[in-house]
Image (cartoon, rainbow, N blue to C red; front, top):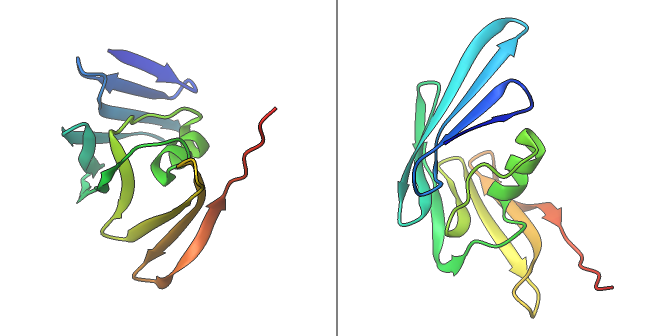
Length: 131
């Protein structure tokens, strides 16, 4: 399954609707960049960004929910959520992500920490309004 976004990027999904490759085509200067992903238990567990590899971790006891850092990052970068994972995103070798939740289980705050900033920093906060 292939899907084009913003005219320059193509996403390729497998039969389980899991993103396996994302191709970026740039024009200034002209070059192509590819990302690929490996999946396990419904989560993207490893990546290859143009030759740079790494792993993602997830909270095994928490289901993915709207507002996790991976989803928000996708929306800001691509305008769509590219990876629909089963569990809540926890981080990678360069970051640890923690969350605050309200009484209904909705994310109210996202904190990011890592080697350069070991103290968790507020990255996003959310408020919900019911009409």
